Image 1 (cartoon, chains in turn brown, blue):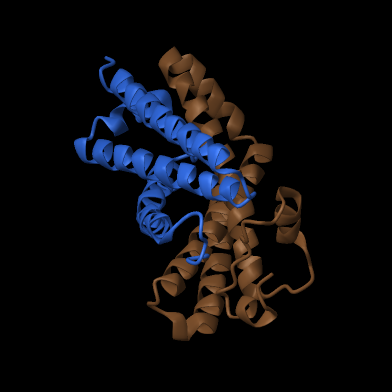
Image 2 (cartoon, each protein chain N blue to C red; image 1 turned 45 degrees about the vertical axis):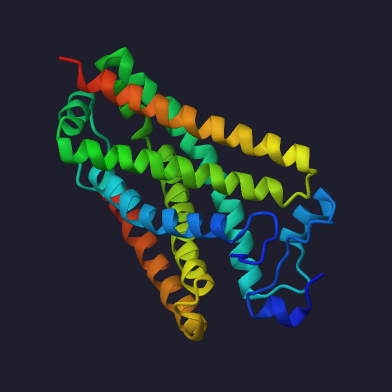
Length: 142
Length: 119
């Protein structure tokens, strides 16, 4: 178990190999000893797994294109339904959250912006919220 | 996030960081080009064909396919390795995600060629 200090600095290693699988994953959701950096870690993993699933689904659906115009265009008609547009907003939330948080992690991990962690968290967080709201509005109005 | 992860060395982490930053650009372009500048948010069949016949778009989309497949499979691998697997299980995970990633790229390139060569 990394010390509370090391975790709160965002450098903790939650991946101690000796842990059992259940406890490992369980720890992603443990509310104790939780710092912002750890929340970021969990966000990236959960969103990342969701995006892997979506990517597979997306590639699979594209095969409809090989079946010709009727197949694809009727699919396009279906997913323009508001129910699917709402799922698009969820997808975008996952992409924006994973992307910006990943950028934050990359900049800290490579040592480029370590001193500005807090500012970066606030800045990228605000950017993410604005991006999501703007795209959600565009999705439902454009 | 965890450069200190013993199992997934520094190089793997750096690969995720670099491909991740590339994806911010490539996925950004992909999303805008396919869903935000297009009327109705999705291209029709004919629009898709016209779109991928542009050589620059073709290169960008294939670059996106390769980068996202790598990033997704490397990410999946590091999540699985964090479960605390044995060395044999780890090798198995590595082989599986490598095969899956290659399959995604081959399938995507095949699909692209099939569509571009269509009338």
